[in-house]
Image (cartoon, rainbow, N blue to C red; front, side, top):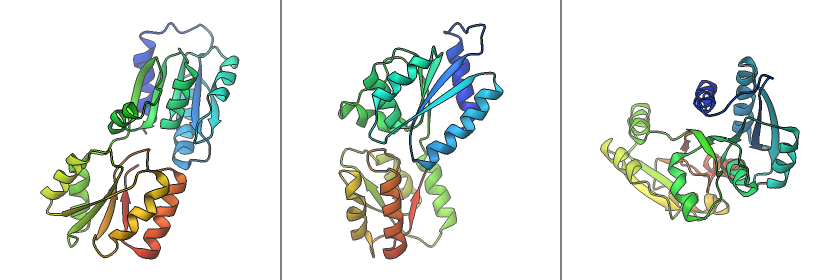
Length: 233
């Protein structure tokens, strides 16, 4: 996530929000213990302070906790809430906050799956900075980096549509294999049968399968069993 992109989103938001004479405050909601989120919040906090905005951060569990968000709002008023990661966005949705929300560290490709699962999302979504990777660009980069490889496995959830990824990799002369995992706990189990069948595993972005814990288990299995794993942050 680019802090400049986030400040741009605030610029768009400012056109519909009357900023107070005092230094404006922004609440950042994120999941505790997730290193990419921590790095994003650190960069975001520095950029907001440089822009004259006072950030306050509340950390929730990866399972979400709307009670903590409601409690943090008592220290407001805030001009906006920043949701860092899908869990934060879902918790803000459950808390029914009416303040403007900007989401980041989320994937545009997950929106349909969220809707199918009945996830509650913020009622006042003012903007979002998405992290989706471009399949054609990724396929080309992997082909250039590993010209000798031929077989690529994809680990996906049953509802996930990866037609664009399959098409992009087939165009680069890869043979495409798929393995399905219904939930995070199934990631390693679904990965192991690819040993000997794929030259590498591509993990397409989906919050349903990947958390700090499932990624760590998957990478450990990759080191011990092969094939190597490529993922996009």
